[in-house]
Image 1: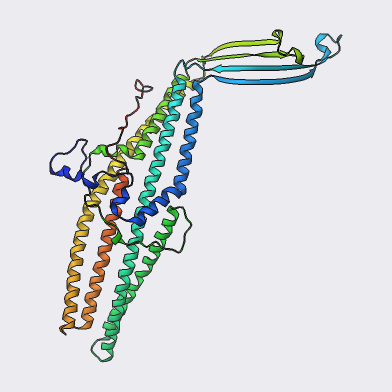
Image 2 (image 1 turned 135 degrees about the vertical axis):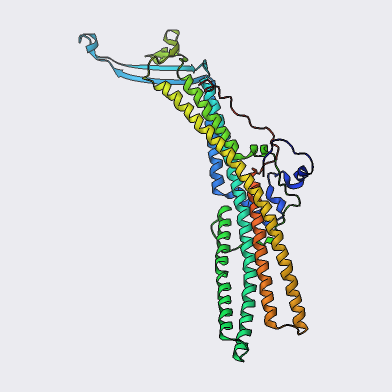
Length: 454
């Protein structure tokens, strides 16, 4: 198993047709309408996904708030002050006076983005919004995978319960015959005990399956945003169909569109912007403010020219010495970027590993299913031959029942093999990102201008 960033030529590339490129609703390729209904319900009601969407909206409004720094800030102020002055200010020879001052002004403030700090803050918030968006996509993809695999687990439990009950029924019939033979001396006590042990053992396997069915049904309730109920969805493995064309070869670039990789990339961009912000804090801060208004102690004179007041202030502030704080903050942000970069790299490597493991699992599952299918086919033929021989009187009824038990066990093994293949197929779908390939706009790494000369 290996990865390639280029398109393969020849026969190996033919499997890119059909199912090879997963789409937004990938689960529909498996032809189960019940799963489609459950998926729609989960994507609309799952509390985890709703929380992710709320976080996305929070990040969006934080971006809108950060965008306001590019525009002048206008303010309106109105005031009315009534006070008494003290005669002490005039040597104590003049009595205090009571007066009222009315004021009103319009103020304007603006921060010229001389050193680009405002743009960096905006880029940080923008990257955080995109990261929240990708995390919401990742949450939705995880929920899709959980719903599908849980539905498969439920269907597997239902089919296993049906097969196990058939085995238990056959065991009881065999035990009844062995006991009858024991009573007439045709079987030993050991034969009876062995058959009783086999029946008890097969019955014991039924109860964990019943519990598994209950757990899977309740898990589906939780995933779809409902409280656990006693109603078990009717799901069987026969309602699932593997796609006719399932790709086992992908270029390595297929994982570029995974939401977790995109989220890690956007986080990297946000941290990179923080590096620029830390560097910009070492440069002067320029601010321009102005105000215009009227101020008077007589309300009738408030709008007269003599009461007019205005101011225009330009300020520049620069930290000459901070005890190494600003420089330390720059290095802190650079180390945070390095940590984010290696987290991004780890996410990419983990994605490659997940896809590789899922692809290898599909290969092994296909071989597993083929082997169990051959065993089931042979057991079915043996069972039909045993029934024919029994009708002709060439074999005993107990031998027929034993052959039926072997056939039911083969059915049980086939159910498990097919369920495992479906589960691993869903794992591959999720590992590929659940998005069309190739992506509409391939991601690009940030310029990392802030630390490239470190």
